[in-house]
Length: 292
Length: 291
Image 1 (tube, helix red, strand yellow):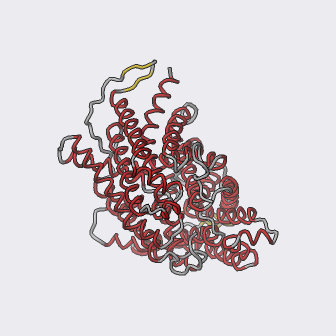
Image 2: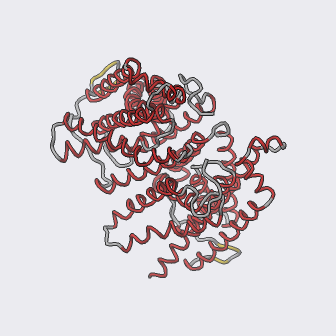
Image 3: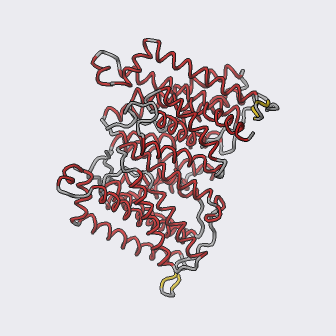
């Protein structure tokens, strides 16, 4: 019984991680650097929906829509004013990573300043009695979360594989120089990557807001999970990062069978280190996970 | 009142100067993008606190044991990240800091978790107890002088040049028959030892430690100091420690609710870090670029 419950918890966690990780992976593919503030961007998504829905009293779906757009804009904004100038100066990836860390702390503390340290809740969907499936409890809200994630991930996958724009993104991810030679506008792809990736982060933020609490520091945990999911699956491969996220969600939830739940973040990093040591390109990555 | 406050700030500056100078050994001189340095600081603080309180160690053995424990972890960190380069190495070390934080928080039988460890005694050296804060300032200045002079001599020595060569031309150094890996872990171990000393100084000064001191916010402060000061420049680290710690103290004199001061401080640090990376990545006295 507990096995099934942990399995389901793992899948729910994995769904949210997969949204963060696929956005991260999209940005990584387009720009080739680690956007460490991605989790903080997801946190702004949660706060935007809180602002529109709980503070302004707008319709929930309209609020979510606006929040996703605002989150995408925030992502693009940071790319335009910080990352892009750094890239133009040919800064190393380590500098971009540290800048991302700076952005993360900046956003976290701005949220803290504007909304306070207390946790916020959306209370949109009533906490309903969970349904029992194979002896495990799952609430309708959790089913909704898994459903939305899966639909979005499938749509994203189709977008990348089937549309022309998506194929351009894949081309840039696969071989930036060659893509550049064939006349693909890399700058456009990078902005699009940031916009779509941040929008996905916004969705993840909203879904977390629905089920758990919204707090300024939620971004740190999200980037740790999203990044780990992406890297263990193969950072530049979209299906890989989704697979990696579910794997992480399951590992964490089965891990707390033996360890205190506070070790959840540590489990992610240990898994990450193991993968970086043994298979740095990730499960589905083709030696593209780590440069050089 | 003001003087007590100034002495407090001065002690924090001295502690961060040691910490930043030691980070500069691994980050600046050896060229390892180590974002997990704060973990060694924490390990040092916890080790010497636990050893003096529960195992009745005297101050000097406790601080040295703390340093040695941190060194062992420094070696371990270099081993597990040995195959990583660039930003992946940076992330691996950052991960180490996260894991260390999770351990401080969750190994409650050892660290008391989020409750922290109170009642860390003031240092006693050969029967003399460093009790007043002004004495503590003198004491930490002496410790800082010893540690930083040691680092300065080390970086100026032939061995220091080898470390810099590890950063600049690892392949060339390997061709000369030097063991790059050994140089790297030695540098990391020395840096970890010095960071642990800074950690012990902090713990025995504040007399209370909890995991939140050794987490992201302080990682950003430390990185800001190291980068603003400049890589491979101990002088820079010391100057930047003074500037960076003093800067947000000005916020205290602005009319602002106390609950806002913390976030404002962090925003200031984050902005400073981003701006220095964008406009002056070599910092004040830096000799090399961050690769």
